[in-house]
Length: 221
Image (cartoon, rainbow, N blue to C red; front, side):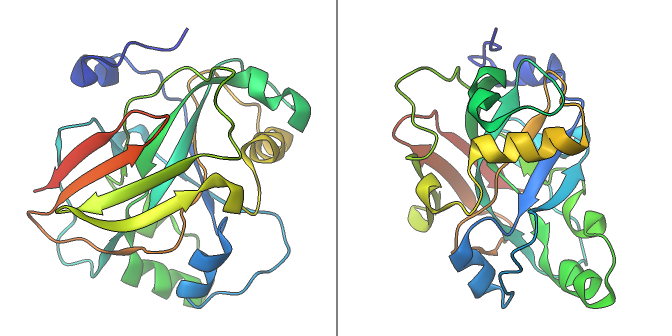
């Protein structure tokens, strides 16, 4: 059963989030805007801790003196029925809910880590780096390959995403992750960001919107 998110703070306090899986480089135009190249290899995967989550309406506190911090808007999937080696055609049965979220990134730190071949966690897994909107049940009317979503900052559209542009779709992501880990109920999957990422500043007001998904808003402290 999908949790009731009508009271975000209570829902977050009661969340069971064993892991937050995040997918990098899943939209071609975002890969291009960061100067990276398509490798043809399996998707980039990294994780965030539960302390990265920020409920809708709560202020987002950013790290100090770590360089540029970028927003990345993403479709988020919550696992309901876990499992190992899930086939793509069965993946939908394992989804408890979907929603929107932000993968916040210390971009300068990430660039340094990529240059030295180190893992990305220092750039990705800091506290408040995963603001998460309300999650809703996945019903038959929702086509995971045809969802549009957008981020506005201070009333200006900064990102527009369409899941049809994903290099690896939701079902295949679940299959890929479950080949390496046994997925657990409550696991979250941030599925990658489209082009249009950019820096955050204190005082900015962020709003996520989608036709078939609930929106969410945050202010940068």
